[in-house]
Image (cartoon, rainbow, N blue to C red):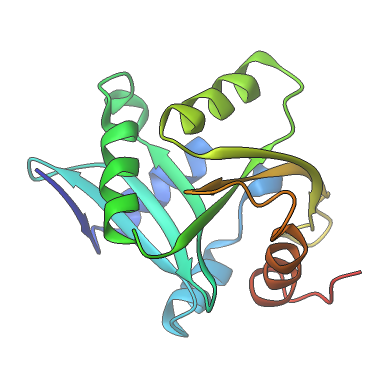
Length: 173
């Protein structure tokens, strides 16, 4: 049985830091501040009473934004990612769900996009730049994926503006 739980923060932090490149990570201080202000849900993915991953998300006015999804290295390859995405889309079935993926320039990035497509997410090829998340960090070339509909033609600008304002605290260009 899948549940989304508060989990043990130290365990979730370990999964987080081992799963994402430094340029795509927020500092622990920033994560804790976002959690304490109710701006970010940083939750454990529990299957049969074991924390197998984490999901960090925000319920925004017009959509749910998955900021991070990671399965612990030792739990990968067991279908847990697909199970949690199915569970999550059912939890938020009345919302559009948005997530970011790196632009597909290598096999791992292409595999990640394929994973989300297998979970019924739509790839939106429009260019999106993730601003630096840490001091002296770098921008990351990203693409947005959406569920249950493609947003490229009709909702991309609204999603981009919301992400820049609400997630990255910037003004959209």
